[in-house]
Length: 440
Image (cartoon, rainbow, N blue to C red):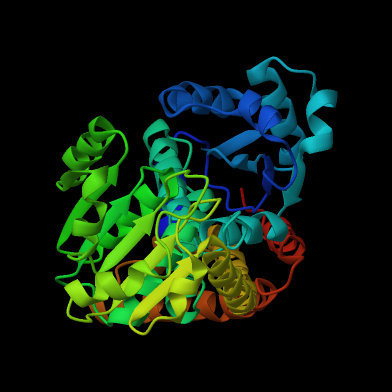
């Protein structure tokens, strides 16, 4: 029985059955190239079908995928036998963007075979991202795969690599903590609020000022279950604009202290040159709140809230440096968890390669079986005139005898092929068997 991969390759328009692994990857990322270079090589989503078609026609390429994000541009491909796909991919990128290859090469990294597969697994699992564990890259790789599948450039072993990469990414995220800790200022604010209140369900928020980070923090807090949002800003028009976007209530700046009495979580980012809330304001605010706890997130520089306010019971104040420390601690934890992810990647690459090498011998085993079956039937037909009329029992006996002989002949070479498939140089064993038995 033919393998699914062998069948897919046979019916694809990428050429005849050939399970030889000849992978290459060429790309650049935030680690290797500045944004002005990445911008020049970026391929918009709308242009992907045309770019994949150009890649498909490029010399030496059988299958290919293009991943283009704000932080990386990579081309992953399976080359034709005997060629160097990395050279072809450098040529493709330079030709497609009409840039000299020499200008690109200093910024490009190149991987082949096992290293190329490992890199695809690491990228998909977010171990190579600017922020380790960020979830967007998995969706971006899946979109790149969908485009390649639609263009007919991912329907063989390259597709097998990508399917495995998606499974490995899920395994890394489920078995490590790379995605569990907040690594942005806005998420850190949410994490701290949860620690203080336990749950954000039913909590009321006040946004003082309209800074971008405070806006993001407010968005995340609302998504985490906060009940309502009031927005105070010196420009009432801007407050009303944000209130409409968030489904909140705009409040004139002169009613700030009235609003504070109703707020459980206060996010400030006004750009004022001095404190807008001083220590002596704390007791007055808490009295109106009947001493219920308050959480202040001061993201302004210079700060909006007097740090002395943090000394008052039931007031919890964090400024941007406090949040940054949370982020750094969480990033360190993610880096620690990423080491476990790297171990998973190494094991999964080995497993994939072992399976792929086994698949590589399948066409040879099938051809060998077909060849000896052809010989068996040919010999029976050649001798049938001399054998004369045979009874049903005699026909069955000849069938059993000849099939038994063929199976015994096949046993050793098939066993050798399956064993050799686990070795890196399995191609030598495959070529030897094909020559001995004159397989096409």
